[in-house]
Length: 304
Image 1: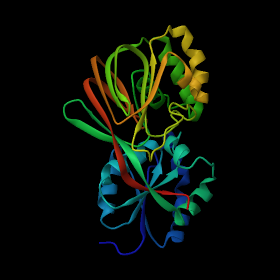
Image 2: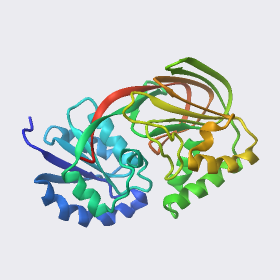
Image 3: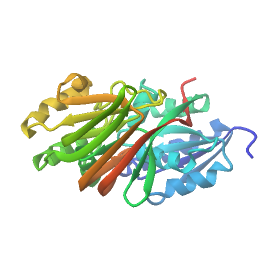
């Protein structure tokens, strides 16, 4: 049992398409500010899960040093334990941090802030899919349009940041058609059912996705609920107008958009499609998919 604060930094040098590796020196120089601290470096996809599980028995706090995908791996490794989780944002989007800590900081200030940060418990989303697969997500999940966009962003290694998301959006849209879904949503006011083609389907715990798209502008990761944003089938040529609405968060007022909070969502898809979870891509996901809110699931560092 760990009796005093101790930190393990789990650093993913492959984050931001390999550009995070240049931040390793800054991170090593800052370790002494944290007293008992160690640095673990990931070597392959999924390695952060192994490192986090090993470190959880020796550290009170794990710092995910990467993007939303690295944070997802660390959270999935230690959810249900008393370990606190912090974020050192060196990924391409770092979307969840935009909700947890909206004010921008330099990386140096972000590191210093972690040493004196307070903490709060936040919700997670939980997804069951495929042949018994299940996983927690921290920020968001998307099926169809945003899943394909996430896949294209991963493959466009020559682009970074917001430019890669713009390229992916245009590339995916060219050959896209709404996805047939049967959806049941458990809201505080009752069950909503949708059985029709859907242009974009997202469930969020955080407000921002894809760098600057406010998919769930009212999301609160401490309210015990998830935010659902569904754009019903529209002609493809109309979607560029919706891009601006998603960037501002005003799509929630559009009659073609269903926006609500939910404790659980059930989706059935006859045809498999791409799904992203905190930006990580899962291919050929179909059949029954169950998504649920897990209130106050993990303790995360935040501004004191």
